Amino acid sequence: MIGMAKDEPGIYYDINGNVVSEAIARAVGHDVVKNERIRFLSEKRKQLDDELRAEMLQAVGKSNPVLVEKDGFGVVELAHGRFNVVDLDHKPINPVPLTQEEAVRLFKLLTGDEAAPKTAEADTDE
Image (tube, rainbow, N blue to C red):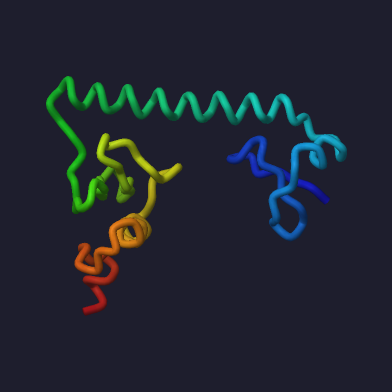
């Protein structure tokens, strides 16, 4: 059995969760061309939305609060408790917004920084 998650068009998985080739997906009846086009357009739309949002924030003189920065990477707070890890150009390197814990973990992996801020969940445990 070969399937595809709706939030990942054009990426096909077998029953064990392993990615399979488009040739195999095509052989079992998936519309590979259509799903590839959907994925391409979704990625372009997300890129455009991010660029427009950044331009709008710059135009009104606002920016998202930066939780921590080091070695060209930063953790930027979005809305509703979501965060992005950004590069030098303040472009997100994660495909979807993360929780604070996930963003800090990714930041630590990228920078090797053990002094990165603790997450809110960790602060409540102390």
